[in-house]
Image 1 (spheres, rainbow, N blue to C red):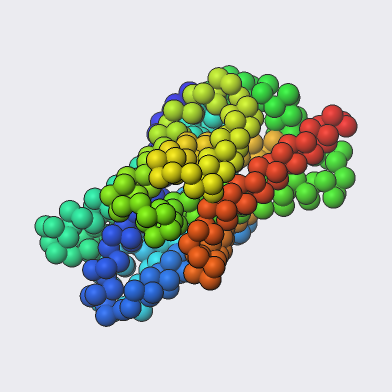
Image 2: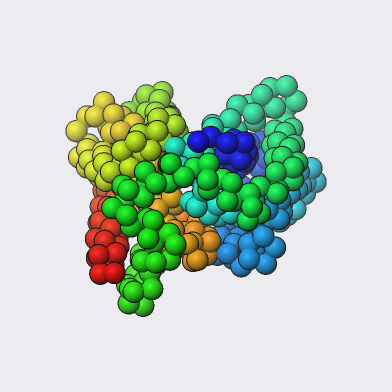
Length: 411
């Protein structure tokens, strides 16, 4: 059931994706204006990642202290202020705290809305919410391009993104009562059919674990393994997604002799498949069940990375990238959706925050590590590196699924 709240989450996640789409196109003009070298983008990326990581780790504490509604309001305000500060920054060093503030807001939105959605959204709504992030990231480059064409400056694009987040803040302010206990119960009743189907898919595990019933009987070691194994899974998965998105263009052009236009097309196909896959696979997940779709998604992901690692032909490489985008599309949102069933509803706010922080760390550490590896031993190492991450993620997901089933069956 798609409600006004789910639509609000879509617009919020569009705003979440905007900053990630802006920087890549804005950076050449930005660094020229501030007189910075090419590598100085690391300071901005590091500031945003640090803010997002800290927000994710502490999101559970913040939500318990001020409530989910205020947390999301603070997050939207932080993103709007950070983007506005970047838009008007007169000197280079002011952009660092601006990006840090934007990252903090993004981390709180990511963890806060994912936590709420995991308890109250259907598989369709969860996938569409994450597809909205892709829409925002896709909208970023043309926003900067238009800004440069009409004003010869990157700043209006950041100002427009700040305005969009300000509008999100206003919408969240008007909807804040929905996040109260009474509003949550109404949302729960509205989605009861969808959640029942998801629970049935898990063989009853989500229903029992979501209320905390499956967790108390498990040993502390197993409970810890389910929690931290899930956190590690987000670390590995994000490494696959970001490494494929950021390093595959260089792999195709410099490593395999593919022309720039074709390589750009296939990398674009990866991101298009990821976004479109989340839109299309949302209803499929609703009908077939989240766990069925996840199993198929991991199989497709590993198969695509095997083909990419083999380097059979440029066309095969391109198709593998498009298939990889489709494979990874539902993994992140469905893993979030199943988190309360794995760790219990009482711990879900904290654990989802840890998972968002791990995703941020994975995007920096693993994608950055793949880049360093390529520089040390050659760009051809990128494809086997992505394959290794995909295999580890698939194996870990399988192990966690088996462990969760054994815990539920022991009750």
